[in-house]
View 1 (cartoon, rainbow, N blue to C red):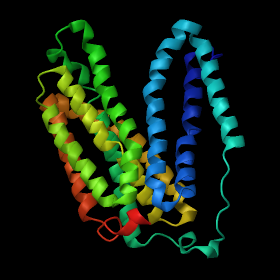
View 2: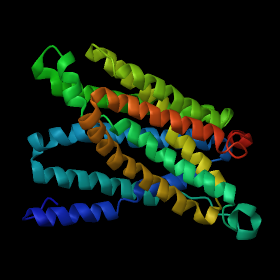
View 3: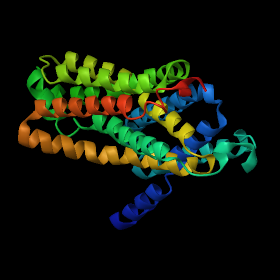
Length: 307
């Protein structure tokens, strides 16, 4: 990318990067399959915190590097960092040998009908989790403009609002995952979604920027442990031989949330007003909480968290 000569070459390479972007799903599968079942929520929470920290810090570093070292040189530096991650993966990670197919009942067969419903529900909740964070993206600058006294600070405050939720998620992901390991995955998933839905309602009626920032931070705390819990439920609901595929679908559902969230926020904001974006997202999260609680009583309301 640092050596491209036109925009089409750059576009093709960015497209190739997207096709090769399996490290996140691969690392998720590795952590889910190699960590003890009674600590999988905590382990996946740690992984989620690392991913979100990179998503938070990456754009900040990317904004500084071109001014310091140049645009093309920035790609060389980023490539070297990725190469270091490759070396660390090859030489520092040791995967425990897998059990023979007959050693575990989870190694063969396919998910039951109940397991299939769990998979579909968890993929939907994964999409909804990301959607809830991204739905305000198209309207956030316009929404905060009337409550920011200095017009020159509008974009800065909008950035703080978007980052506050990510920061909250980074701080809570591993802790909520550990809580789910000790308690019950369905309680954590449903409770986190219900709490986030409640926190979205006052966001529609804030009068000061700091109020919105604090509410988004609290919402990030509530949502931070959702994806680790959802991943853990999926891991324990499908046979080992298809766990990688299912967890890959979960990553795809999260990317779908990144697409659907802004589209939904822009559509609702344009037709019903900006407050309706928060209220609509709250309603969707409340529906997700109800589904998580009601639709899978035997699977994730049971002893899964203690396995």
